[in-house]
Amino acid sequence: MTYICHELVLISIFSILAMSLNLLVGYLGLASMAQAAYYGIGAYTAALMSLTLNTPLPLNMLAAALLAGLSAMGISWCALRWHDDYFVLATFGAQIILFSVFKNWVSLTNGPAGLGGIAQVSFFGFSFDTPFKFLMLAAPVAFACFLLIRALARAPFGRLLLAIREDEIFTLTLGKDVRRYKVTASAISAALAAIAGALYAHYISFIDPTSFSATESILIISMVIIGGAASLTGSLLGATFLIVLPEALKFVNMPESVAATGRQLLLGLSLVVLMVYRPQGLLGTYRFGRNQ
Amino acid sequence: MRQAIVYGVISGSTYALIALGFALIYNVVRFFNFAHGAVFCAGAYLNYCCFVIFRLPFWLSASIAVILAALLGVSFEFLVFKRIRKRGGNSLVLLIASLGLLISVQSIIAMVFGNEIRTVRSGLVEEGFSLFGARITSIQFNILLTSLLLVLATSAILRWTKMGTALRAVANDPELAATKGIPPQKVIYFTYLLGSALAAVAGIMVSLDVSMNPTMGFDALLYGIVAVIAGGVGSVSGAYLGGLLLGLAQNLGVWKIPSEWKDAIAFAVMILFLLLRPQGIFGKRIFKAQV
Image (cartoon, rainbow over all chains, first blue to last red; front, side):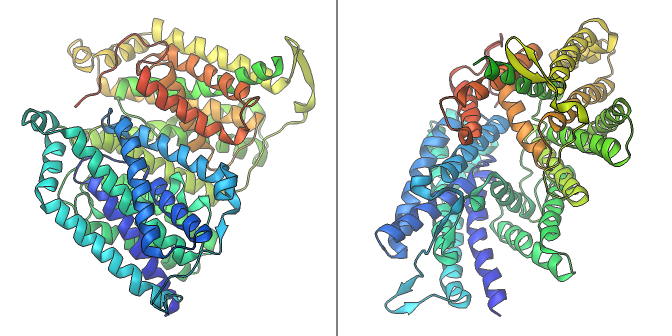
């Protein structure tokens, strides 16, 4: 039971990451490879605030979201000069640079050894100290993110993002400030990823750089693509699938190390097969990246 | 100082081979082929397999590895990229599919050979000799020589053979090339064959000089991309010089900046180039992002 709850908490956290990234991939058609870096910014901000100032989770989340949102504004303001594959490269570069910062700025992040002893969350004397209790916190947060992103996507803001995705120059001719919308969407996406990071830091209570590497970014974008671009339920499905998969492989008596590689293999193959036969993903409707 | 420059040129000449193959493929098919890293890694492991496990003579095992890895590169085009293009996928879809191929090949290699770091060392390695006042091993000397010869050979193929001319024509304007009766698909296969062979040779070189592990393809690919962008996208000689420069910059940079920031520096350089000089050092054309 504890084990299942632990998996569900991880699914909640990764659904937030996948849904927030979907705002960029699905609604704007921008494949960002830096989502794990924003997730890391959130986790490190929350961890450091909790360890040095002993602040509660909501405040840490807010600070994490602000910091990640601001850094995303800076990064995307640069990266948005480019389209499609150049945008991928630029965000990839940002991801690797931020990962180096997590790993090598030892005086702040304690380097590869990681930060431990992050406080358990408690509100008014009720402590979320077991996976089951933490699920009571993580699942509603994930659901709130789902509602927020869905509301954004249905609002005029979301329709404008779709318009940019479909025809950027035409949207420009309507007098819309395309770059500002793109930067705003990137900032919102990064802020939500940072909230997931804060949850993760307080849940696991130990973080190290490997959770925020380029491999994790690829995992998150695979969740979005497998589930389906511009489909939030697709992202939920993708996150669930890729989190449960290695556990399922363990149940068929695969050793843990092989199970991790097995997930990578299936992830790679499903990306290839989907790109050939179904670029819109399992539940998506938007055939992203088709030639216009 | 001299030692750092010589080491820089040595690691630069392997980056340069990767970048050269990568740029060739990019120029013809116009997408960032991440699967290039898979071919690089496959080359190294196939050579390991033939040389260390089957105990074949080195020249034979290296040739087998290069041929098989080049065919692997072509098979990616045959099985995946061609189909995506037929279905109207753009460069982003191709990029993600190639990333999927890279991840798949990496995990297959990790499953077969394990995750540990391996080396392919023959007995001769320890002998060092002097070159411009810096000590290098005979293997490093051979790497320099092979890399130089391969670049000259590639330029010769591009310049003087019929296929090379066709390749340049397709890279320049595929539709115009097609009107002249150049079969684009044949040229694309040839490009993958040539580019992948170069990557496989680079993979074998790295496994001889340094070491190999299943994720080596990813790292090499990233350096290759940085080299291509620094040298100028679209320029084949620029890619080669970009690789040499990256190797030099990294080895000289270690003097001032701790080596663990190597990756971050490489990417900061790439982002600066993209921001300030998107046509690269040697690129002539002004690069224009397509909407």
